[in-house]
Amino acid sequence: DIRKGIESILLQRRSIEGVSSVQSQWTGPYAFSYKAEVDFDGTYLAARLMSRYKKEFRKATEGSSLDKDLSVLLSWYAEDVMRLVEREVRDIEAEIRSVYPGAAYIELEPDSKYSDQFAIDDVKQEALQKIEMDALEKMMVSLKNERGRSDPKSKNSPKTNRTKMKGEEETVFLTHEEILRRKD
Image (cartoon, rainbow, N blue to C red; front, side):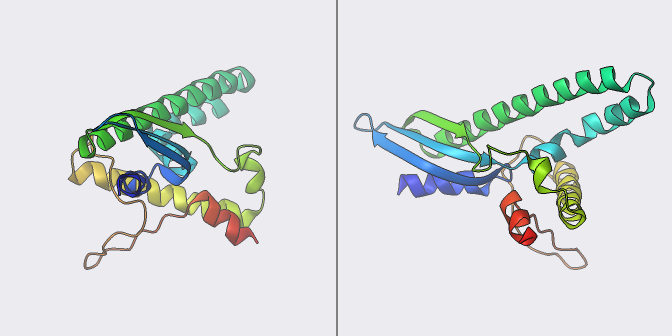
């Protein structure tokens, strides 16, 4: 089934936590359209941007004009998060079309079921901050290792447990949803 195949492609990407509201229809004998709402993993996006922004955030906190520097820096960071999501969507659409050439129209709409609240409000508790930090650090290590041993353009690595090699620690990524469940 094409819908299940596309959903599998989406859920194999570490950038995506969930898929919902899937709609598809045949638009011709060999062409179809596909639409879905996707929940992007903010921890993955932060890990992708961390190496570029870590030094800049440190510099902003050390300077005498923190308010001005931080405002501009947050604006740039937000813009780069959006650009990263846009690149992810383009890459995912290209991957879907490479597997399913009949995908004439693909619409992936970013949509979190938590879009009415701020993530920072979820992690006010120290235990949840630690869980998020651990997840971010593991994601950054994984991305660094991935770049070191494979094609840097390849972003289609499983987002969950990977096979453990002898002497290697198993990497487990928690979704935002799993972190919230641990809160209860």
